[in-house]
Image (cartoon, rainbow, N blue to C red; front, side):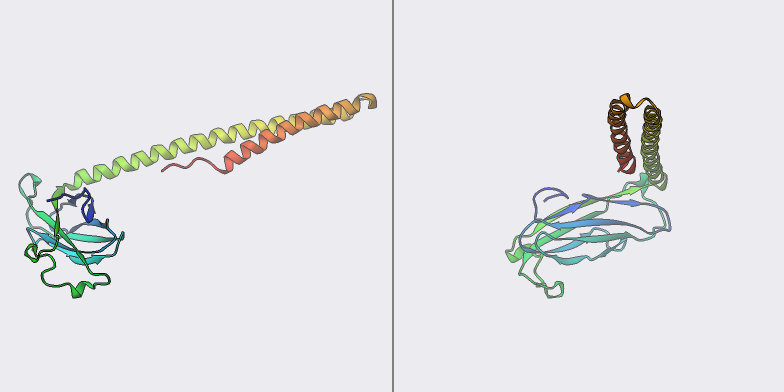
Length: 220
């Protein structure tokens, strides 16, 4: 019997159901069921505690190489299990069916092992997460995002400073060019050529830094 991974007809992610457990509150977990075959595959979800969970859809047909999302809702509970250890289990059965088979047209023995058809089964365990632990994970994620944002801001600031330096250098070169224009005419040709060459270099540096600044690195 398979678990959530492997090479079965339908793979399930994640391979366990995690619920944030709070008394008198519902919680849900989404499962992604992926059809790994070129066939139409029907699935059915079962649990050892059907009164505690609401599964939609609990039965369906997935087209070749397609997927669907199964939402499992934990009903509000009046007491917590000992040490937050949950013994509930889920089972996802899958079987190949004829193309274009509608879920309402599935034969009654589709998931019956005695029918002679190949029936695959995937076991999923249940994990309860205390609210404090879940909140801690969210805060860690927020801190990580904040750090990444700070790094991006530092990089952006550095690029701005480099652009300002390049602009000041370009302005200085322009001033030098204006002074050269006022020199005697016999030196004007050489001076203009030299200033133009230096000015072109300054312009290219400024353009390159402006391009970097307009496209700052992104973080995930």
